[in-house]
Image 1 (cartoon, rainbow, N blue to C red):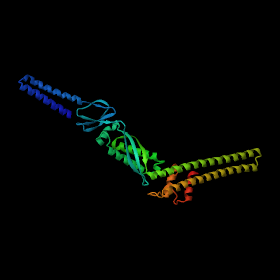
Image 2: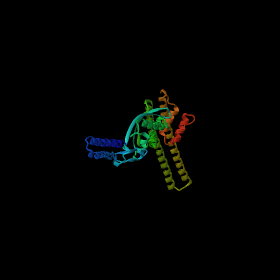
Image 3: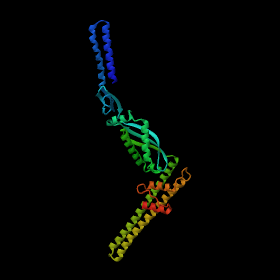
Image 4: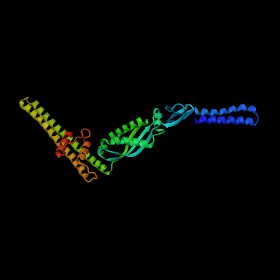
Length: 344
């Protein structure tokens, strides 16, 4: 519109100037040439095309067709109306990083270093511009969306499970939530969202270190228990095979049959005793780990409860098999029974 007004005004000025000049010089034959001033209107041809740069789309605002249009101009030169104004928006990937806090369901806070990559798809550029009136999402609005999506996810976990076995699950949930709100509310496509670093404080970090040490001890005990059971199975199998051989070499009498039955019973007994012994040793190590973590945090600003220590260890060691239910009364026997049921 500005170009049209300028062209009209310029043409009128030139026409009037030529006409007045012809009258002043009393050369009336030149007066008709004043109409050539309207040739200045040719400048309007420059308003009938536009160039869109690489990795950009052109958003169209029309003075005569209802404002912002849903369709866009692609890269390169495009023919357009002189009543159209073009705003270019980048469709290339953009990155953003920030630091923010997230609260877990056990009332703990952790500081997250977050990064994300996003872009505005060409087909959504017009819708994006209608929502924001900007060529990129304002930083404060993006920060708010990130904080809300992160908090909605971290509140599902306790601090210890979040920083250990369930970290990737939490990151994936946060990414899914953020992608949905960016696309729904702002028509932005999220490419990826990552946790670059997490700081939960010195006390939590110390507990996680203790928990890692307990995991290492328990892994060793588990390997030893499995080896003992396999050895017992081998001894039992050897005894059964020896009894079978003796039975086949002799007449298959009731006495031979009894020897074979005794050997099989012995095998079952040896394997059962090996499993029971392994379970007991394994349980003792887990109980020691629980007690060690609990006692180490009795003097914390917010002491760790015994139930929390139990839950922390069991959820880490048995996160694939434990349903999270604790005995109504936490005693050494009840915990041993629970642990035994998870490993035997």
